[in-house]
Image 1 (cartoon, rainbow, N blue to C red):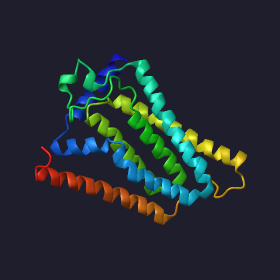
Image 2 (image 1 turned 120 degrees about the vertical axis):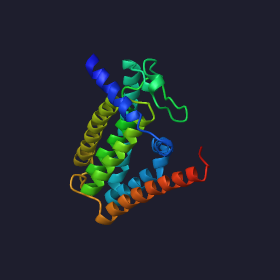
Image 3 (image 1 turned 90 degrees about the vertical axis):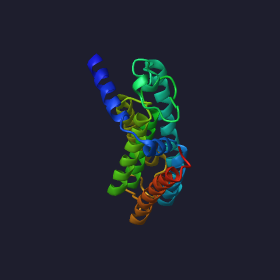
Image 4 (image 1 turned 30 degrees about the vertical axis):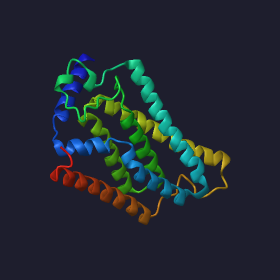
Length: 229
């Protein structure tokens, strides 16, 4: 176990030291849940458009799945009590911190990683489009990586969050199917077979690309003209 912890710590320090002023701003922003609200809103719109009446309990269960993912992560943090890298006296002087943000005391496991993978798994299984699935997991990995970059989580915290989030997402997706089969048989479309249209998938992909590019270009311009230090 001690060897695993040492490897986790060493890998964290390697990843955390890869930083510069531009990515400090970008990663801090991408780590914020609020920055992704437009993306979440678009996902909700596509779910409602595709699944119609079924979207009512689908969205309720997605909300519940995220709550379960997030709250369980918090419970484990306070049970295991593994210090975040930013708060660990053994290495905190080696950790790159952005905007003096150190998060809560404990970090195992990452709720950002868990929640993002919960969303990615459910959305990809509901939408059933290969390129969208790839994009969702790239997004989830980037959001998770920001937590290492900011000095808030070890890679092990992230990996555990991914596993838990994937299990929650998969479980709640099949709960949706079970509810439809038992209580909403007359409602269409069928969750097990329905998929979003190619146009909606393309719209989501283009939105993520344009949205993230716009943010990065804006940060670059602000740094260039010294709006950021």
